[in-house]
Length: 343
Image 1 (cartoon, rainbow, N blue to C red):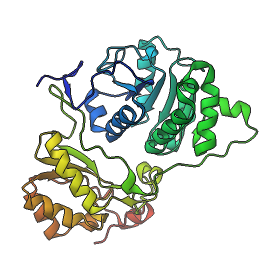
Image 2: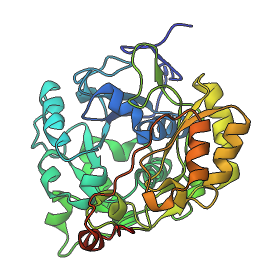
Image 3: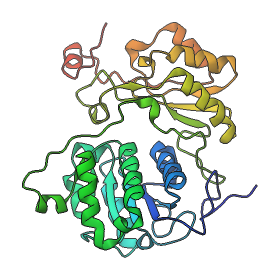
């Protein structure tokens, strides 16, 4: 079976003849990084299936044309930008310039909404090049866009309605920061939006895959089993921006894996978690995979959660190395950063 678009992709939709909106997903880094990021998949399938939108993706490897349609970024109604790291801001400027978009534009197509962990931590550097910054988890933004579309239709996504759309997003979430709001409200109170029931986060069974490029962690079904972290190490941006810690149900995880490995045609699972063995059913999940002869890779581990039994089961899953980050071997310093080293 041949793939689709610039990257010879599978598990993607052909551009529909009739669609509600044109929505671009912009990941200002490499293509490989974009398909390693789970929000790329969550947003793509959610918007395509719930809004009947024409959704395409832009990265540094295809900065001026969509991966599937070949359209310019200026041809889209909305652009959702995911910032993974602070320095991606320079890559975003390059993508906007390559598409002939004034980085200080306001109220012109496409409506640019920026999100991601660095944006949650500090949205101010990103305001000059977007219409709005979203302070919270992307699933909340997607659901709010869907609600607005269901209530107002395509009209509210037109250029002359952008200010109204931004106000609606703010009133419904209190998680939007923009120059438009600063000029229209005497006081803006922002709160971080997050998904309270983590089992309702829409982890797709199918993931976008390319026949010529692989995700950064290799082939496999990528799944997030928890979000947030209870340890709150002083240096860890992600623990604070994704707080509070939440855990996906064991049965749901195993069902997703069962369908996911078939869809990506790889008998391997890559887990996403800030502290894998904090999941109350982590050991049970790994035992199921070993029993079913499914290989797996676990992320960086907190050394205080490891023991000989867990190291053995990781080895049975086919992982040859593990990453442990004690940060410091000095006991007092480890206490200061809230990652106590126990000798």
